[in-house]
Image (cartoon, helix red, strand yellow):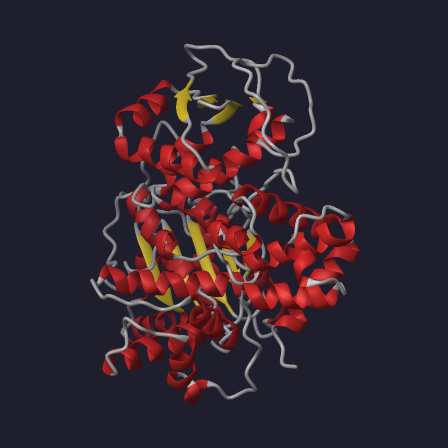
Length: 526
């Protein structure tokens, strides 16, 4: 087995472990997991090396919640218990990456440079071998030095602070932050990520850890209702936790404008400038609404210059791209584009299902007992696809109605359709579940369903079978064990099928076309 197979298994283990390590600060989770490198896997244990800093190994060894999360994830992904053995490269040496061939069915035999004992007898072959790759959220490393943007001359500050090392902390000037509307409920750990928003999420996490760095300003663009405000506030809350000395100002464009006008009327321009130019982080929601305010735009431009010249972080959200803000001057639009523009798109079906489940988790934390079947969840995610806000509205309507009807513990598809009938203004989309996917794929490829679910390994059956497995995970987010049971396979086979088709879609236009066509027909009427 090639070393990348072990790396792929490890990616799945980390993703599974993350579910049980959400209580950890993001920076600590990244520090722990990024320090670990899988080295070997045999029938008894998995060897993890690369713990470059001894304290990381000690942290894992001494913190049961971390070690248990990793150990449980290993058992879940591999399917049986393996002891986790940690190696610290500062103290120990291990110089090969090896997976015992007998642990993976149908694996091509590739001799490792330095195999580790013991040798385990081979198992019976399965239909497909296992080469999983998991789509992780995007984490973006910071470059060594931030980029300063040249600006128009400003009045020299009357007071300077002597420092021996660069710092992002403001001068010790009292600033009234009571105007900041930072919402503590909006955090990274309750923000659901998917393919449509994982790049903005990664950029936002980078800003939270390294404010004033490469992504400055960060311009978050996307239509209304996709979670831009949530992501912006999550940045502010994380900065306050990671950098408690920093002054964070979160404000809507409307409030920014109103405050500026009020200070002008009271002849208190200096007070406004003191507030907005002596902070460390400025976050403005819906910046596009300032287009028609000339005096406010001038003050915004000057504030931008002052903050950027001092490496202070700026975060903006907008439903309009900078190039389309025709009433803004070029000099201001260029400021918006000087850092990084993160584009958010409508969430795909898998992400909508994940959002629905996260909303359920919030209800569980209120000690509410809710039992809702997968068909109901998939129906809501399919039917309400406009944006996150609409999906949340449908969820609230469903749970509220079920509470009144005392149906919280027995929400099925029929009841869901009845409860949400008033919100459905378009023709219903087809219901998608494992069985409907199996039936449609069989028909699409003109093969019998028994051959799709059978053991024949010819390409004419294996390829449709893998596509059906992929769609069960990609479209309706069924768990690997559930899909495995529906196809009478081991869950590692489902992992392989999902990852193989994912790669094929990326490199093969014909596979991409086929999968896209099937998904489109599955989710439309007819």
